[in-house]
Length: 167
Image (cartoon, one colour):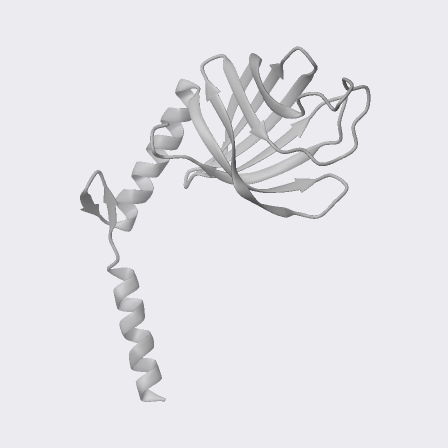
């Protein structure tokens, strides 16, 4: 029993002393968290960010993990949506249309900091097929959720994190 407690103590000490690397320089966990929070805030305020999506939750189905690299990117007034879609659709072009894979124009962009560490973005996006409402929540650690709504399709949600590589 003493050996297990000693092993747990050593593991806890090593975890507490863990360091992170930013641009080749070792920093503490707190400094890394502050750096990530600054990158998140800068991306949101400058309207330039990428959210890499890891899972999706269709309105009428269960959550699914994604193996391919899907993302939502904002570049100024342009939205690059490369997201899968599963769900019921109405009034769409023959063959299914573009779904959520398109480059669209940003018609509205509203940002609120709901509470310390949580940003909410409301983006109105339009392409040649439909108008979309993207409700994005981003935590200071980069964790993100995306809810997509349109009149032509069932709502769908995505979960992932903001890309910190300056993409």
